[in-house]
Structure formats: structure tokens, C-alpha cells
Amino acid sequence: MIIWSDPTFESQPAPVLALLTRALAAAPRDPRLLSKLGNVHLDRYDFAAAAQAFRAALAIDPTDLAVRLRLARCCNVLGREAECLSLLDPDCLSADEGDNPDIRYHRAVALDAVGKVGEAELEVRAALARNAYHSHACTLLMRLLRKSGRTKDLLAECEGLAAKGVRHAQLLLEWGRACALNADPRRAAQLLLDHARVYKTAFPAPQPFADIATFNAAFAEELLSHPVILADFPKDEANRGSRRIHHLTGGGRPELVRALAAEVQGAVDRLTEGLRQSDQAERSDPWIEAMPKRARLHAWGLVQRSGEFEDWHFHRGGWLSGVYYVRIPDAFSEAEEGQGCLEFGPPPALVKTGLAPCGPLRIAPREGLLVLSPSHYHHRTIPFTADGYRISFAFDVVPLNT
Image (cartoon, rainbow, N blue to C red; front, side, top):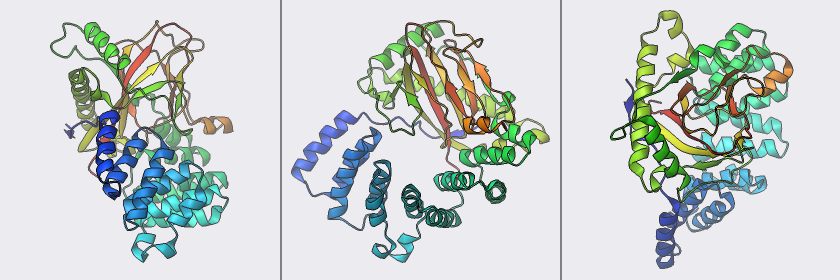
């Protein structure tokens, strides 16, 4: 069984903002308070407000490297690459700070955005040399190699990181893609989408509910009435009109959230116990090799109506990801257009090349259904036109042992 840490449920921002506003009124030049204010804005994807708070904190305490990094991230998201590069100029940092893998990564992002691709690659390689497990640096390096058509280098980099023991979701995805681009469809299919690694299950109603339908009805109302439902996201997020609830325990009935999280953890434990008992051939699967000993559940609610959906994406921070269906408006079908279905498939860019090593897998949601899959599998939800809500509880199993 996994040793579980407490699930991640973000604090409701309104009370935190109110407390920070009062505290800053009394101490307007406290960099710690300004930094906390920036973090609250980041939780709400308000990068402009976050940048303003971090900029003010850094003006008071220029030595705070964590604030400098958060401000650099905001600048890259907002298209302010020149400011990012100025913040992370090696001449303004100590030698050790300048070689920090996070600083090198954010510098690489800015350099790539302004067309200095060669310099960006040098920076991101330096980041990985300092920290081979840096998943964001892995993302950028592999993208640069793909864009330049260096498919053999792409496979070599993936195998090199794997030889160092790296097994995060980003590497598994890139490794599978590299195998496909280098004419190894069998290995690519094992890494990118093994249909047998997508699991469907259910569990009984949490106490004290008499049946799962009653629990689902209560949980659906808890999400629909939640005071903090996010609807605006940066362009690299998968949301296409759908809304999220990140601050799950900030509603009226947090005990429902904790009860569902406990049931999900139990289902994950049953799955991982079966994987541990699998034969030696299955244990050679890099995803199974990456199974965490310790983890936490990072969860959020998702609410969709007609025409809203999640575009193709994967979950970089997880080992296993899943979704529990709370309310479904109609009986979705896997046939024809597959309206409302959950669909797994190879990365769309790979499909366009004609080198996809396997076909897609569709799952029609049903209330009370739990679907579990490796976090690096690409997936999407297909838009639907039925009346009513498609409500789900999504989550990542985030490893804590690396």
C-alpha cells in the first residue's frame, strides 16, 4: 500500500485575501506578506496581479530567490521575456544562484520565446545537468529537439535520463513519442497508451450515506454551490469553457470531499497491490517501476455544460491520475461522435505524422464510475450537447519519494 500524506486541498482565497489586506495595511513593506499575496493570486491564475505583488516584495528584499523565480515565471506567462531575462541575468546573481536549475529553466523559456533557440538549449541542458529530475526542463529540451527534427537525439536523451533513474510522467510521455519517431511502434505503444493500463472500478457509498446515488447528489450540489469556481485559465491549460473548483474544502460540506478522497485512496491501494503482485515481465514496465512508496492526493472538481470540454492533455505532476463521475446529464455513448466521453489516445501531433502506434480508447462516463490511468497518457473529453451538468472529481497521485 502507498503511505499517504494528507490530500492537497487549497485554502479558499477570499478569507486569505482579507487577512493579507488587513496585515498589509498595518505593514505595507513586509516582503513576506507581499509574497504570500502573490501566491494567492497565482492560485487563481491571476499572473498580472501576482507579478505586481512579487515585484513589490523583491524591491524590498532583492535577495529572496524564491520570489525572484515566481516573478520570472509570471513574466514568461505574460510575455514579458525581457523582464524575465533581466531578473535572471547571471551578472545580477551569485555564481551558485546563476547555476540554479530553476533559474536556468526560466531563462531558457524566455530565450526560446525571443528566438534565441541555441542559447535556450544550452540553458535547459545545464538545468538538467544539475537536476536530472526537472520535469519542466525535460519538457522544454524534448520540444526543442522535436522542433529541430533531431529524433535520434530525442531518443538518446530520453534513454539517458531513464538510465539515471528518471521516471516522471513527462519523461515517460517523451520516451514513448521518441520511440514512435524512431520506428519502434511496439515500445511506443507500451509507453504511450496500453489499453490494459486504463482501469474502471466503483466503490460503495461513504458512510453514513445509504447508497452511492444519494452521496453523488449531495456532492454535486456541494460543487455547484461552491463559493470559488474558477473559469479563466492560461492558454496552456486544457479547459475549454469548463470550470474548476480547486478549493474543495472551502464549501459548506468539506466532510464530503474528505470522504470521497478516502474512497479514492482505497481504490488506488487496491490497484497498486495488484500491480505489485504482477509477473516479472509487467514489472519491467517503466510506469510500474515508478510506483511511489509515498504519495499525496491532489484533487479538484470539474463542472461542464453543453459545448464545454477538456482538450488533449496529460498530468505532468502525477504518477496515476483519475476521475470519479458525480453527475452525468444523459447516457453518453462511445459510438459515433462519442459525445461526453473520456478519450485516451496518442499525442495529437504524433497522430498527424501518421506514426501513432495505437488507436484511441473511449470510455462513456456513468455516475459512480472511477477511471484510473497512468498520468502520462494523453486524454481529453469530447464535447456534448445534452442538457444538464457533467460533474466530476479529478485527481493526481503525486509521488513524494523523489
